[in-house]
Amino acid sequence: MPRISVVMPVYNGQRYVKKAIDSILSQTFQDFEFIIVDDGSTDKTPEILEAAAILDSRIRVVTRENRGISPSLNEGLALARGDLIARMDADDISLPNRFALQVAYLDAHPDCGLVGGQIIFTDPHDRPLIQMRHPLDHAAVLDTMMKGTESLSHPTVMFRRKIAQAIGGYSLRFEHAEDIDFFLRMGEQAKVANLPDLVLRYRQHQKSIGFVHAQEQAAAHSRAIREAAKRTGAPDPEPVRIGAVGAKHAINERWAWWALRDGHLQTARLYAWRVLRQRPLATDSWRLAACAVRGR
Image 1 (cartoon, rainbow, N blue to C red):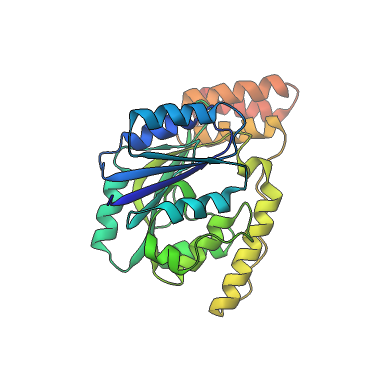
Image 2 (spheres, rainbow, N blue to C red):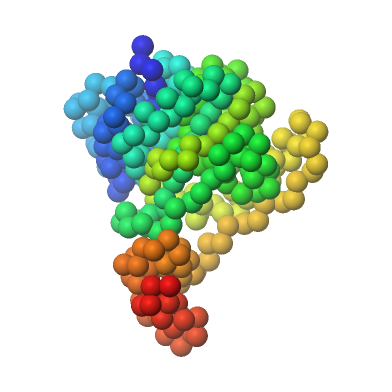
């Protein structure tokens, strides 16, 4: 049996899915099977998956009609044979030592049921934006999540299959925030944690769930933490704020400031120039451009 079962749902992912697959196949820890659930794609995703499966026998592709991400994840869990499950998304890139680091951590911490890691946001073309710094220990991870802020990135997590099965897998009641509910219920059964190491390049693009379904995601996150508070006797949490999506210039502006803050000057200048072209009369556009040129 493989030690790890990698579960990756994909829907119309032709633009990025090959890079995601290649990043898994390039892991230094190679004892895994790779279950890819094609959730009714209508683009060239099925052909890309078929070609990948021909080249590597560890890849198992399930293709059927569109059902949504939670049913796809549960289907992948049901097919999994490894005692550890590694999540992956079809538009991200796992760094080569991700699995090795997470397996070592879980082996050294038998009380931990789920471990994630640090991520760096990239733009649609893999240019670096900013490294997000998630809390490390169980209490801080759950406390941050209950306050409405992401503290575990779904495509980074590795967890124990038996615990996931014991809690019934992913709920169908929290569309666009199914991961939050899953993490909270996992955290009621075992410790959860993040590695201090960078393990994934997390792609930002305007077709991602966080952009397209920001309002629904915030509402589902709010329901998940309210229900967790009731289960555990914690105080009723505040509603989750909707992510700042906004107009195209607002996205470019956010990406420029992120990149500038983390020292990615080439990326910062690229997006600052786009903001300036879109809003040449705005004072904020010129301030951003000046900061990007100075590098601070």
